[in-house]
Length: 357
Image (tube, rainbow, N blue to C red):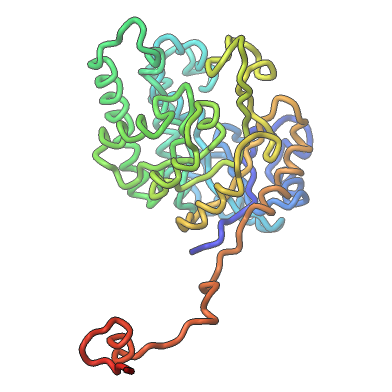
């Protein structure tokens, strides 16, 4: 077994125009000061991390690593959540997601998709240059508007949606395979890959691709009322990245899992800072340690109540307390003894053992 690495911090919620959050060095100084040991870097902020340059220049990648190393930090993963979303967008969401791409591509769905796919290819190469083994992203969605079966849906529509999703992602997965990097899809409502069943369906479409894996975020599972601990038992071979994000579901007589179009603070299901929701992280960290999870525990701060900076400070301490230094020997080794073959036969009543009448 290997001790889980952490704490890490996903930077997406913290990047802004004010120091120290407007430069990689500033973010590194701040995150290190809170006790983080790694950062997960989104690829849509060139001022923080220039993906195009990273895909072309080993020198640039070494400089990025050097800036972080000065503060005792590593990169856990790169993230293309927004770019992955644009790989597959249902027409109903074209306008809503158009802002995820540069202005030149926003009004042309095909050009926007091609741009997103190119960004994924760059992320594969950049990840390899940085020495990373996993990459965080979204799958995008073509079938999501048909989630609830009313009017009764035609199964052929869902089959076609997943076939097309697989067709679009297969060459991208091949590129990541060439670079030796796993693609970890965050299973998330609004993505076609949002639970175990949908992940399995996609995995079949890409022929059990060796780079098709999971970013495990239990908050999305709790809000879907899934067994997020049992999920680890089933899918642990595919869990290659991990977001530490808490959530709570408070049953209401007025709304439920769908939330009634309410703001986050009024919904029965809400994201919370780690330790302030209902998720049993002690059990999660135990299971991941049991199954020898090789990656990082990365805080993704999203809370509708707590301030983000205090959430980061508390989150670093919380993750550190959850990490279990794994045992290097069995707890009962002190009572272990070496048993000869003759003694074993005697214990089992087999021929060749010494019997005492």
